[in-house]
Image (cartoon, rainbow over all chains, first blue to last red; front, side, top):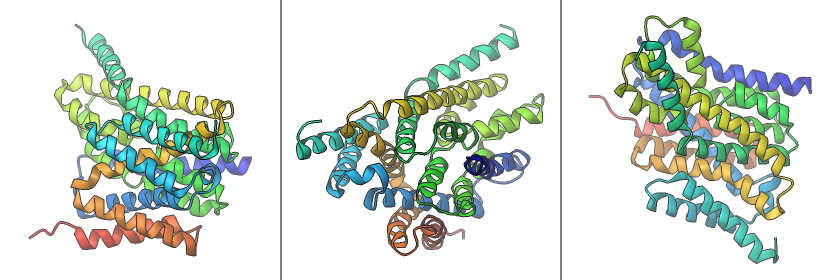
Length: 110
Length: 236
């Protein structure tokens, strides 16, 4: 328990380092420099790698769903999100609905 | 209107805008995060501390997923630090907009802590339209409302997940990855960002098959760097 508390606080500190560093740096460095561009690339790639892994090789509770169900949920969510003027809530609700509905059709009943 | 009351009005005006779509969407992501945490037996107190101290859904998700996979703490912290690097350019670009000479350092460091992608994007657009004195309170009203909504959503997700039928729970744990799929898909016009996303998405699962513990770090650093060198804008 102590170990987990320390882990969470260390993750908080590791995040805050970058936010805090921005205070002395702001107004002195350009936000569109090469280094910052690279940082953005790494952040995008990391989040994308985690999400792709969660969807393709899920662990825990997501493992109860099938790969075609997850892909269908993403496809429907993406379609409605982009059709609905980038309404995030609409897309998320649609994907949620697809997973619940397909599980219901597959397993019979809630 | 004197300046104290106009600042108070600006705070509540930011809170009102935030209480609509921005906080609802972010809270939906945290509802899913709490459902994932509960399903993985990650304790509620640790989830709530992470909402307040990490205060970044991607970072918290990386922390949770790696913890569930039994990853060494040092690797978890390094991975979280790497996902958080993007806060440096975001915050550097935002702070000059709200900064006033009368601000104490503590106020700026607090504002830097409250900045996340969800309030950065709308506030970068709306804050410059306000008079200088109202900008910081508007932003704080916006960001603190985000935080309150996310704490409430984390509590709700954690307590509700077991009272729902299993099928609804499956939907809840899918919410967080869906949220990021949608947000990331909106970057399709930005060639460099989209290339980074594709490189990471392909490298992540492949590397996971080889080394689950290091896959996120390697896919992020490797995929992001590859995309950067292949697609970076060339300056003449």
